[in-house]
Amino acid sequence: LGALGATVWPSGANFILFRPPGTNADAVWDGLVQESVLVRNTASWQHLDGCLRVTIGTPGDNDRFLAALAKVLAEVPSPKVATESSTIRKSSS
Image 1: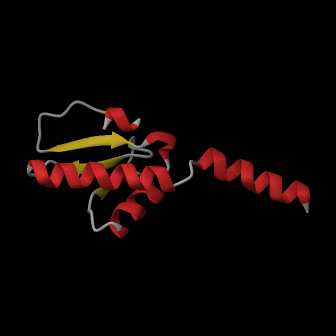
Image 2: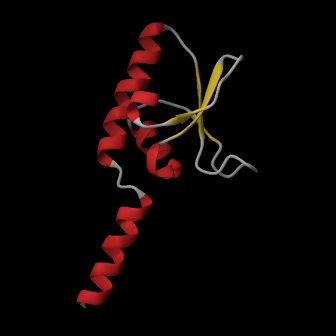
């Protein structure tokens, strides 16, 4: 997860709390669902802005999750990029 740019919190449980780079957790969560990978979206929970929680699985499950996350991160624009694009369109109109 760290290699993908995510912020990761230490865990002693069977899940990992992480914040995707760009903190566009809702879009990342939706992209993972589209890839048939389910994680818990905790972005709206108090003190967990922009975070997701993934349950640790088998090595194959974990590899599938990481591959899907890499794909989604490559496709999902960060909120900052989306905001800049909106501003450019508005000023160009």
